[in-house]
Image (cartoon, rainbow, N blue to C red; front, side, top):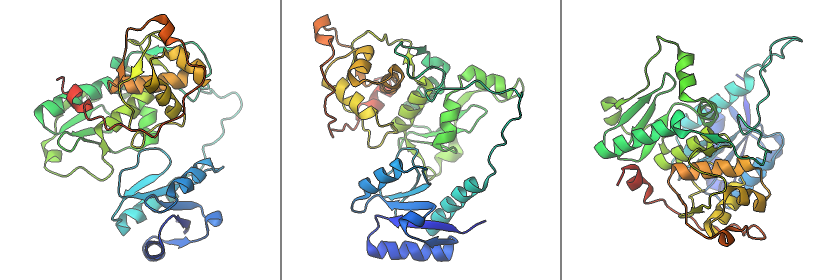
Length: 348
């Protein structure tokens, strides 16, 4: 395996020196300047880390990131390692990144081969369309996840969801979920309705079940376990694939009960202005898309995720009150902690 060229960004001098030593001695890596690096390590607790991360997100072509932080980081932009850092975890993260980089590129199909139909970034619909499309949450993972959450919280038992895919383990006491899959793999799985999962695994495949996992309950959640609310949020967004839940009409006014904790939840950039608009006043999904000048699919994804966490209310307002504002509101830094979400999932 080749030797990695790694840049360390945002770390204070002593921590930078310690990381450089670990990388050279334990990880088969050399520390180089940022412009020469193939992989970047960013200390998110360091000064100016936000600007460094934003610059890396804008970089073309993108390069792999390893994010170090005392707190959990949600998103697809990199591998998160929790402090205090273990050299073994850092070495394993670098090894996984290098293995992905060294995999051969997929062969280009020959002329006349059967090609899959092109898919839009939002999934099964055209993300530039103004018309709303719909999906049924009960046909996807999110509905099964909510059922498992309720059962786990009611019984305080560690539960396991078996889908014939990667098992999903729920730790109700710690309010955590663990699955042995990164966001890219999970996102791909979320695009499949459950009936297609059953068909793909064949008649002899395992049945979808929610069952106690006493062995897992005796251990601490593995590193990389995710918050239950954050996990459901992104599963619902990806299950929606730019569509609205069947129960939400695009011309029905809706409003956020509280500000989503977007510092911990996966979200694309457009989530901030959508949240600001829907928190400020009741709007229809159609009106929100027009005000923000966003494709309907992008607003629908946000609404679907918020609906899964029961963060929406549907006020009875007069038509005049739902007319769109003349301009999008400024994005507030206000955040919510979703203290009531678990009570709702318990069915109280």
